[in-house]
Image (tube, rainbow, N blue to C red; front, side):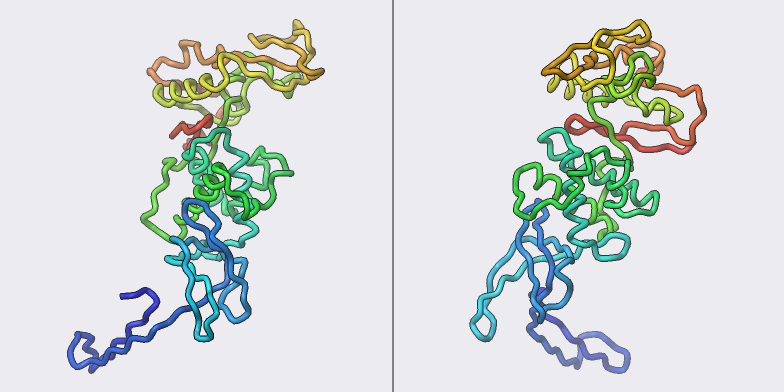
Length: 324
């Protein structure tokens, strides 16, 4: 039966079996306002007509579009197989949807589709955990994307990374309307890029600090655990892109001072100070962190949560929090 039809079944003395009943089939096309996206991230179009139901700020997914003439012969666009996207039981605003997609796009580092899918789901997981919307969370310090990129993604953007980002956000939001929708990240709520491998634990001074050694994660969490398989995958991907070293803009002296330790070096490139770090950092080769066969770091200071790596995609590693 066509989805645009309504089946009315008469009830006789509380009996709804198909006997002595009257069936009435009425054609119905409901015209809805909103922005419509294919699940692959393609923008299909929008409706904003006063006679339609709903708001143009609503966001729908669809399986495609077609044209149909109304009674007057006017050609109308219809969107097929639509689903309304919601967040926290409310219709997500198109403006917020566009901003989420754009931030996810700039959080990613590769051309690998899964990287953007996983970032969107990790953002969804953490926003649910702390009771915020996805955009509220991404618009905070949770996302390191510059403020100038925390703006709406234009509907005209149809490059591959824009499509991957929209598709990832759509996939995550489907979890609000489909209880069977799975989380591909195994409950990840955080992620890190190449700097995690470059800055290490406590041997090298961070490029943006004159006092802080190592990546912040090693101070912030009770322990960090990475399976050997995921660690090797992460290293292979990052070194495959960067080689054996990675440069960062630095506030250090261009000549390494005696107060600095570690293996990083300095140079000036186009009048900018650079700190050059080994990939992976020497800290990751220390045997004390591999006694179980997997990487395991234990913070000397007690923290509320530990971190366990769940997956790697592109040049990003994803973490789930484990309450201690």
